[in-house]
Amino acid sequence: MSAQRAVYFVNGSISSWRVLMAAHEKGLAFEPRRLRVMREPRETRTPEFLALNPRGQAPVLVEPDGTVMNESLAILTYLELRYPDPPLLPPRAEPGALARALAFAQESEATACVYDPLEGLFEAGADAISPDRRAAILAALSGVERELALWDTRAQRTQFIASDAFTLADCAFYPVLAYMQRRGLSLAGYPALDAYERRVRGRPSAVASYPEGWSHDRPRPDLFAQARALTAAT
Image 1 (cartoon, rainbow, N blue to C red):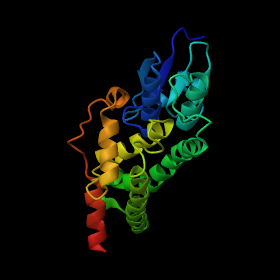
Image 2: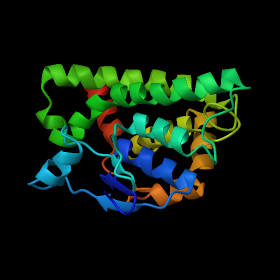
Image 3: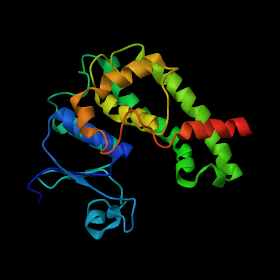
């Protein structure tokens, strides 16, 4: 049994970021255990970590009583159910807001999946892109634009993404948005979403969970500029 709560995480990972943010929002004490995955052997592949999560993926939450949880969205729900104060879901008396918070948290993963093919540029560089991957990247760029338009409409309605109160939907969605900004995304054409991002950015939980070594002002590399260049070349 663990004597102290621990969160195993990968720096800059959307999934890990979600859990770190929620833990800070809940005011839970925990030991952050950063896993290095950019060199071999990956620390997510060690026997010790695979004993916690056979899939070899972070984040993993280990509770003081020995309970082990993986999968970021599941961990968010677990934290809310086990530690309901302060709440990260609207009350049952507000079923519409409750439904939005739960649905939008899940939808944040869909947005991340739409963006994911753009990571091919980061991995290989534009010159190494095959025709099939090029088509996937161009489709992803268009898909991200549709996703942003949807979220911008939602951000016009409430202070936070699902309601006027900060919820686990924000813990799920904000890291997706901020991660894309790190990769060069501009929110200049999405004023409500831009205001939302700046509002959340200043929360103590967002400051505490922001990836080590990152800057809001220096995206690197600009995958969106590279994707637009591919669009212009076709």
